[in-house]
Length: 107
Image (tube, rainbow, N blue to C red):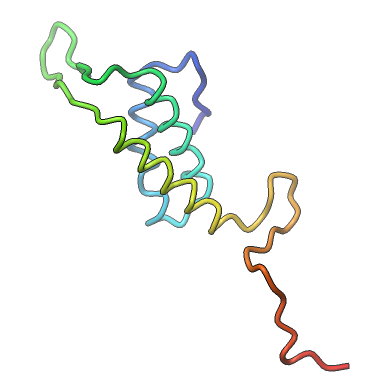
């Protein structure tokens, strides 16, 4: 899985969006982060409607894109990453609770 960049084609971005959409089912923070990137690039690069695939051989299809839906998917993936990432990017542990429970702590 390669990282998407500003020079990635629309087809590459759409493929990454589809390939990484199962991040929650797979329990993969890496896939969720790739999905977030694909969402961001879709919002930047795609017009409201686009023709996908086919070329002169046919077989392509036109799809209508609703930016609001992509934004919702982006927000959901970002929230999922925040709740499920167990380590920060520097490798240190990040705790997701706001308190420590010392109920069973003994001297």
